[in-house]
Length: 231
Image: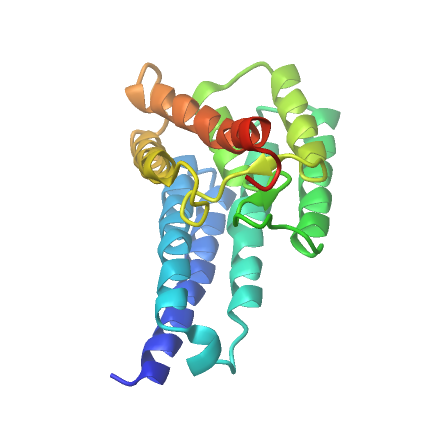
């Protein structure tokens, strides 16, 4: 297989995320939350492997006719932001005005974040919360906290996108990668498990989701405190 064919194949793999996004949206429209999260987890897995493949097969060099960054950002907005926001609004976890305020804050702040310069630090981490609302909302689905706590989480992460806080990229951030990557893999397993059992109460998947999410959210800030913003 030629380098051009391999590079094009990576782009096509990334593009499958749009299909999984549609399947997730159809499930969400029917309030089949287990299947919605299942397809979003599948999309998350694809998003985790297409980047390393893109770098390995040099897609910018061998398939420059497709803008892989734009393709990835488009799908990420659907699977990380738009569909989770819709699910949070439609689930009934946020009553009345709190639901409207949340989806406006999530979708508006995230689209501004996605198109601004300076998203990445020199060590390939994110500057500001990277709009991973799929990770936030699935924990909310699993734990079903009070709506005031949900509203507080939405407010915090919406503002955190534009604060000088560091959030790791589990694959690309070199520091603590030996821990970051296994934790991210564990998060994926717990997320898929929780969705598979339809968020049944008392499952260990819920605790796993909470603990791995807390690590992934705090690891970059901890690095920043210990080693400085770019460390």
